[in-house]
Length: 191
Image (spheres, rainbow, N blue to C red):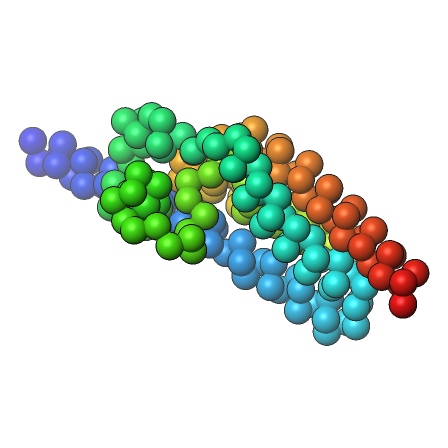
């Protein structure tokens, strides 16, 4: 009996510590993006910085319009029984709050994007940052690609997204960067 209790408490400790790891990875996406942006600014790569900034803004608009046209929620909202391990986590709290917001239990104020899943904004922004690492600091890809992969995986482990959301996000990232580059080229012609 004592061994069983120790095994159960060990299981919960591992569950809790691994969730902390995945939640940290999930939220480190913002640090990764800011680090890449800061490096572009520091090295005076103005065109790349502006391309990245415009692509980020475009990706927010793209995900919003896609979610309005094709509303879909992440796996936690369709099969919550599969994700009981999230109980007590920050992700579960946020998912419950967003679910309440979407269902009208929390007054709508237009500030929350809601529970959209397709495509993953986390994966799109990470893919964009990784593209700029590849373009300017190719030797750093040994670090950037695993980082991007972990961020994508964190969106799956924490039940925010399906794998296909990440695939669509990479396509959207490419599209947003291409549009941003075109915008910058056009602004040069006009100026």
